[in-house]
Image 1 (cartoon, rainbow, N blue to C red):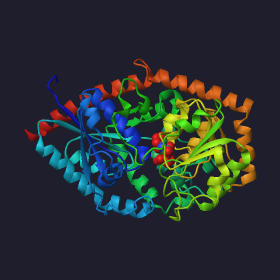
Image 2: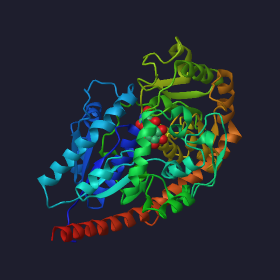
Image 3: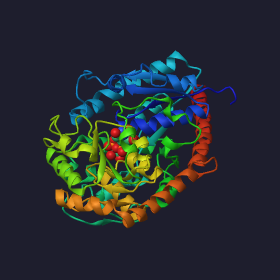
Image 4: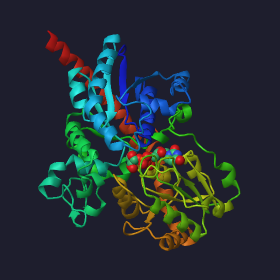
Length: 477
Ligand code: UDX
């Protein structure tokens, strides 16, 4: 065992919300003595652009992380964000063969390594590629255990008439092991009638079929946040809550450049603002919205009188229109608001001037908000975000809802934001967020739950690699 050379081939989804936890998982595995080959899509590499190899600094710090890219078959200039469905159709069709070829080539180039595959649970092909090459198959789920448990029990949803969930109907789903109850209105958009024809539903159905053959499943959550759900999942397959990986101790997190857009610095602007007075507004890296939503939000923010930093990512409008804000908005906000295309979110959230986060409830944003002890005002748009909101508001109690229906109204937004940012209510939410932050810090200590789970995973993984190796040797004889 002492001379074993473990080599993890890691393939993330090509989206910021997946790349971030994957990069930190790579650092973590490398810090435990694994060699890692981290694979990005060529289009991601092109967007990262600023540095040839995003892991060069990590390597200089002594970690053996190598870097490679695979094409998805589409031209680099193709706008994958805007044409998401088409991109995913190509990914489902062509990417598996490309990965297969890549893995085969890597293994032939150095047959002495003991290889394993670490991939995003969204990918269905590891179920085919891993057994073909006798690789231990590690599946990494970058979201909540709740949003894993629902599609994991897809057949139960079907049996109970909840796949697809009717859009207008509200029913409690109370038969998923480890999930007390979730209303159909809160389930992920790809399980709902209106989302069911999307490529995401097809991809998820295939992925959750495939994940049943994974040897290990890692979750970027922590046990304390979702104990029942995680324990229930563990009865079916080895599941380990090892998150939040971005804040894992003793890792040189800034050693990897993984931001797909360049970051504007908000520090100077925030410096002049009183503590906890600024609302940070961002809808993540991925989701699109309409001009009408942006206009109502813009006016709502202005009417609220609250100072804000608003990230408006290039390409946020589903129409492809570059102009997301009402005319003259820039002049109207004067010193009250700062609009940037992208920023270092954790740095902004941890600035003392920031008191709240108006967010789409992406899982990384939720974890980062908790980590910084910042209460959330929730405006989920799609995918797992409605389920995350439910957890934030009902279970962890450090957030409020922006609006009840889907329709946004500027006067209502202004009232909500004013109420949220003012004194007593914000203080109460902040106390809850601070408790969660403390629990997170504890989970990441060397004897904390996430750290212990990671160590247990590494031990189990090494034993499994030995098992697979012996089985293959027996089969050859
Ligand atoms: C989406 C889903 O909604 C999310 O729940 C899922 O886990 C991944 O896919 P996304 O919309 O990108 O993700 O949201 P989120 O998970 O919050 O990730 C966004 C990431 O981008 C965060 O890590 C955040 O720090 C980063 N970010 C965002 C920046 O670095 N700068 C910004 O200006 C905005």
